Image (cartoon, rainbow, N blue to C red; front, top):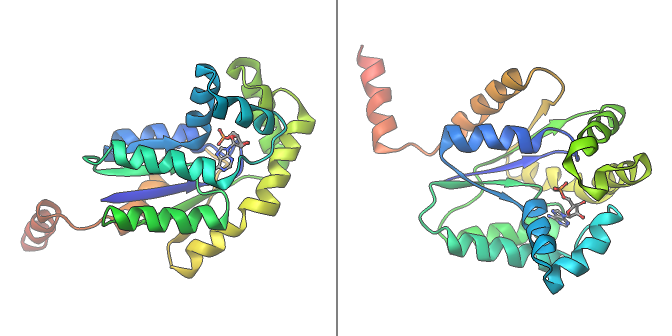
Length: 207
Ligand code: AMP
């Protein structure tokens, strides 16, 4: 299984790159932000509680997002792998993800972090807010709050994966296709060899 954690502050391009990666690697996309917004749309109690925090740019409690990921893994047992977008955002979430994946006899293959400076993030998110309809994209103060939460609470998750030699950082400013190519090169280093890919590699060496 190929399990990618796509990491970076809000507005770094995780959603855009996720769409391209799921098509290339046939992965199931798990975005905790999307899952939470679906709960809000459905008007569930969980959604109502989450909305208050999300509108303020604050994190939703760990157990809420971990529970959603647990259910999503259970519901996608046949998946070739997952791309985790916006999760894990805290070290306890990262630890839980390791435990959950172990229950499915798999693990995180690698984490790719997209690095973008705060001023560029603010510019991108204000632009996205014109069409996204997301309340947390609508004003600069809220956007800066989310970036601060990322820097204070989420950035340490990178260290968690660095300790496991799974952390890779990329400049998230540039052409979408160039960044996509760089992400693919990193992922391909971590791809578990399949009988088919091993045969292809052997054939290439022979040729
Ligand atoms: P995103 O769509 O990833 O930008 O997430 C939007 C908002 O959802 C965040 O600002 C948080 O309030 C909440 N959220 C999404 N993912 C998580 C997570 N893994 N842990 C806690 N809160 C989250």
